[in-house]
Length: 397
Image (cartoon, rainbow, N blue to C red):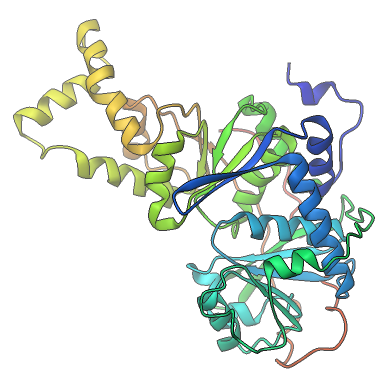
């Protein structure tokens, strides 16, 4: 039985689950990030301390319940911890992928969080400026090209972290409050948004924890920015609820190498992710029709005799799974659109049965035009604190 089902009460927000894990397993590794070729580890208690300090620093700068923090970043711990700090204060995290469409100037200009912005490095800071945003506070983590920038709104992540004065605010996150907001361009070209409440995220995240039998022993791999609702539902929320370790690659360019080195047990991606991985394997195979390719196809044939299947496992399946970094993977997930049947069958021949979890979501046109760019005094205006997602409980398919 899943131990989560035995509890009389559970935390009702994402930061609440962070505190729960820090109390239950303070020294366990919660997060791992590869930097300069070395995996850096942080415990659950270290995350609790850091998120609390960030919440205090944001509060000192006027961040209040309903305020929005916009994050334009590749997957890295600082972005996740800042999102949790904003939610700790009853605020919203608007997450944008710097390599995706949401980083387009018009979509970036439409973010509800214009006063508090986290931009990973120089490229992201320049995107913010080109979009016409003039945030009151613009935080960054990569100092290359920015350390000597005199702009008064710029503040490095370490300086932000140290500026809270040691005061940890009360936890203000509420179940019905919006935790994340996402943006996209609709079919008519207009900007659409989707807000997801803590309660919705946790209901769907816990459904995955129970449905897939996830435990605190999992090793999950986060190779994409949390700029899609499926990542928040089926990776971020389960990470907090189950208490497993979340691993970040050094960069998108090294993600395949880092995944092979790590050997995660849980991999969640979109159809684009899985098709890219299928292509990665296909590129390693000999050309169709060659003698060696016929031998490999024989080793992958599920209907081959016992000896061929045994040899196929050690000589074909296992090496190909190692190419993908899937030697230990037991929970391969695809969120949203399912894989084409031929691709799903290809992974199945490798012993990787990709399970599909639907991404039920409701998108709505932005109810207000973007505010005119320019310096803003005081705290950010409150983003409407209601969930735009009222999807039913998600079931595995």
